[in-house]
Image (cartoon, rainbow, N blue to C red; front, side, top):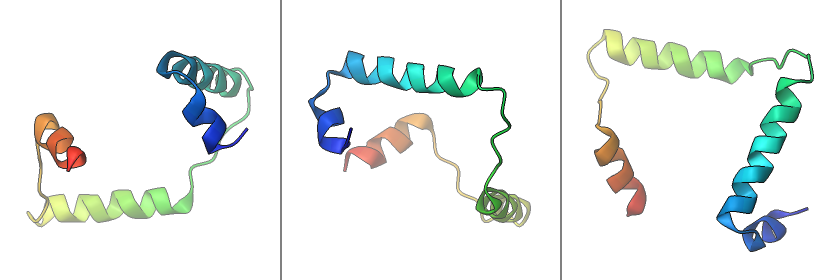
Length: 68
């Protein structure tokens, strides 16, 4: 399956596929490691909050910025 196959699916079909994938991972009983870059991103975000340079937006502002 590739992205073109996925795009042909209805929204409901794509959501069902995502749910099936998450369920398969949930019941796999294996730890999924967190990539090292996640920790780096979190640390950087903590720093911007601590130094006051973080910018927070509302959910509606975020959604509006994604539509542009």
